[in-house]
Length: 213
Image (cartoon, rainbow, N blue to C red):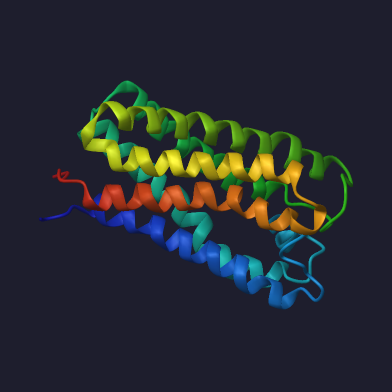
């Protein structure tokens, strides 16, 4: 099957996942004393974190590729895959989430790793950007998962959305149930949910049967 450029750009979602996973796994090497089971992923990219430079290097493809992948998927869906209005709205909202995440966290990184709110920047990071990302993720994934139950052509992607949504809830609920020593473990369910779905969305775009001329 002949693919257009926009279909090939779907593979940027896989690149984003690999880049993010590499940053999460390898950045702690530059952070003496970092406990991945207890600490949040965002501690690795805090301005004061010794791992900040390595994190920025490893995650650089993630920031660009996640936005490119989701944006291309939105363009493809709007032009070539009508499906249901709910499905299209879900993809559009997920794309908006990727933009808010990339721009918002870039503008307002945590100032101090592993500490409470240290000022305006940290409040924006937690109470504005994070809440917006979570709400957009939940709504978009719910719409796509529901559409997958109604439309066989997007059923596989709907299942992926449902799995990602479940991971987000496991992370959110688990953070309030597990002891502090395991906070980082359940938190990673949430952070990898959206990144993993972005890769699934990219593969969906790559394998889409229709080609833009």
